[in-house]
Image (cartoon, rainbow, N blue to C red; front, side, top):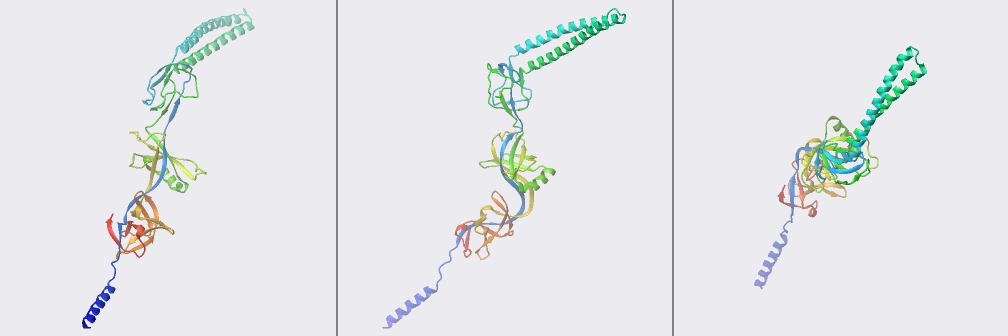
Length: 361
């Protein structure tokens, strides 16, 4: 009986001590970062298209047989460089004919002027009538007009002959060749012989919302806005330039204003027709509160972050985002510099959770 009583007492004591033990508190592993304060750029982002500053569709101004192409399609050409040669022989013959007509008519003019001079002396002595003198004088003036017309014909023939040599009107890169040597070309044909694009420097055209128009106008009026271009697929900056054009009207259909930035493009990193990501830096915001972009979450009431408290608890705090710049976000309100925010592991958190910091960014 005493043995049974002692055993029961021991069992009861063990049971009571087990009831008083609390289960260990579960902590959620998270990655955190500290909100920092630093100067950050105010930027606008858009998708832009690369455009040549100048595009020339080269066409023949005279018809004839193409005798030679002086370049290879797709290569760079310089202003004044020979591109095409058209058979000049028909135009040389036309020039020679015009020159012969001028020589003939100049001889006739010389004779008419000499005859008019003789009649001028005779009419003074009444050896000829005034009517005869007027007729001879009129013939001399007519011959003079014929000579002037011949000289104009020579100039036109020389111009037509010069069109047989087609030269590049600018520095640029040639496209696909549409006409080859031996083909017959037509004057002012609808199909150009070749298209030349100026690629150094080059434009990038893009558009920003009209609510940024006031800022854009102020900046383009006082200074040029710096712009960077990155590949549409992502990556590092491939070219830097500045805004050189602001359209004179907002597009009423899209509510955007069109801009163009000029890039030196010395290494040909930008190519006509290419799409790029454009970032325009308007100003620098001093002492901005910055946190990693992945810390910002979106809920039913808007954007928020989890702030880690001193006791390892978390606080779900609403924030306003001023601007997102890639991996960083500028916070307008809700966070102070030095506070710790959760950047990974938010999905398991509740306002009553305790956290265990696994990594600190």
